Image (cartoon, rainbow, N blue to C red; front, side, top):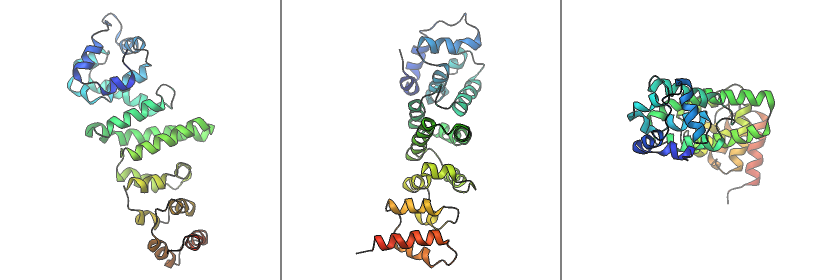
Length: 242
């Protein structure tokens, strides 16, 4: 049996060999993909996403038809629906991380991933707000770390996250630190932004990501809050330059 990762990384020949093993001609179109998934001991969502995010499928127009879809676009729409709406139930965290590891080297899928991510994260964050489920939160944190470490997103995505008026999820994820470590935006740019909470800046300081010169320059600004000013002064006192 082929695993999620094996299907995701299969070449064109391997995909065709895999699918032609299963005779689903007599199945109705809506049952074909699920029928093959069951035989592979996968959920339909796993099977569709593994196939759908495999770049080899773009050169195999027969595969959507084998799976009961009218065309490639129909298959991709199904993939996108599963990916953006599932919250670690039909697709495991490991499945999601495997997708990111493949997408980072696939220009076409990487371009659409940013749009998919916006919808997916909105779904996950909505669920967290409703349930405060610690298991979902832990998986969400790990997924976000992968998004930045695998360089899945662009500066536009990052700017949208940084400019959100409600920064609760950003703080929960320690997302500002992830962004700085990914080097998508220069640390000096982020450090001088008013939208970044003092507590978020403290985390950057604690990780040694802010040079002393930047801290001193920031303190010259008379408009910074008392909270931020205290954090910066306290840091300088504890970490004086030799």
